[in-house]
Image (cartoon, rainbow, N blue to C red):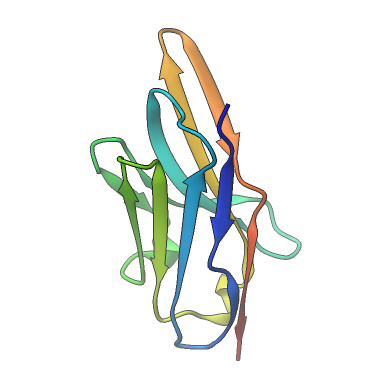
Length: 119
């Protein structure tokens, strides 16, 4: 069973950019939605962006116009391009995916990658 592994986090100054990547360690059959969530210090985990298997996207209001989610269905990889970063974007970013086969739904989470935006 595949697992999700994120990469690309780091320290960046306000206004800078980062690109997060998330790949599966093995093929995940019937992969549907892939997404990025984040958890800021002292806050609950929140959705950042989602992308369906057909490419439909959805964004949190706080990142619209600055972040772009994309995916490569050939290798079960999802990306998050983050531009114009702000200190409030500082968080641990988690990759999420779900697979569906009949009535069975499986959820996958990555271990998270830290993004720190300095002011």
